[in-house]
Image (cartoon, rainbow, N blue to C red; front, side):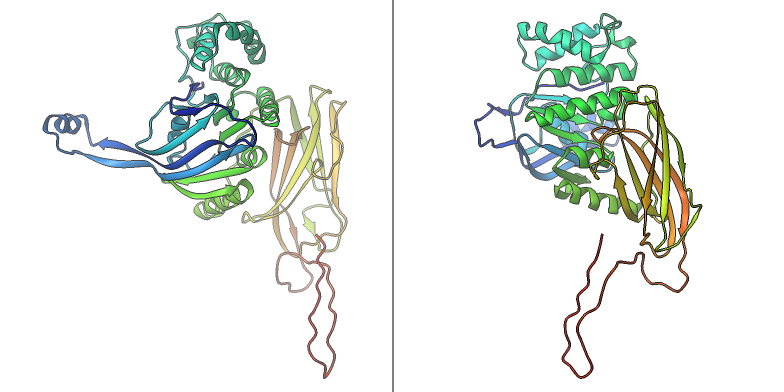
Length: 418
């Protein structure tokens, strides 16, 4: 599952505080030679004359990853993300530019790329841990922890070629995180495996980052990028499209995707997990009015009463415009726990939406508000009608002040309640 590798680029010893950047990239480029066919490659070798075209997978990319923070990497397929991660991991060398990575690096890249299929899971643990620079004594100490985290005790002495994709993902993630790297690089690993283990991985990443580890995360799930990363980089055709605070970069990228797709959303498929939403209902029916009560009921079930839950709700206009969102965790409500079935009502006592048709998104989250156990989408769930012609999407309580006949104009004051 995972490409675990020790970086072979300039690796610097960890420094005392104030800590410098964990990763520094300056004017990095990667150019591949693309031949039309094998014959053109052979002719080029014989004649020493170019018979290829240059493909710039990365073009003059520069950024820094602060130590102890999460850094997100986003972009469409073919944007250069995997190439950049391979360079950061030391698997591929850049064509030009400078790169410095501080401390020990572990990476989880392509599925199965780091495992020898004929070796057992236990033998692959030793091999990969050794590649990461661990001594024999440390490997012996860490191996039981890696096996326990992966939960592959019954298969650890079987050849990896007999593992499913999910099993290989478990082993790869366990190795990369249990060897305590300074920098952890992950390429879409959270999208593989069952919901239970996805949550376990998320909890482990929270421990890693809260303990001062530096995380470089590549994902198509903007929710994870926004949750784990303070900074993000958007690559487009090998070049930087945006780089900065993750919330800002994610917003720009989503706007780009929205415009490209003609205002259509593609939702990530969820893997069945230990909890599921059983009902999402609008008790007031599919028609609402501004100024009236709007309510949404959500019910869910779980096989594990010890799990903690939060609930999130999003309201989007049917053309994809995000109107508002709500979360029990953001509202500082205690997590739901101790039962096998739950129900909660979200109530807006004074609906401020004026008009339009809207889609409801309901999310069942874990206690940290990061892992999504389940989601349900009610497309075109309700409409808001106005008794008179109205301009705009929402009404905001406000007041006018100042001004009188024959008097000089006085600035008006508007108070907006959000």
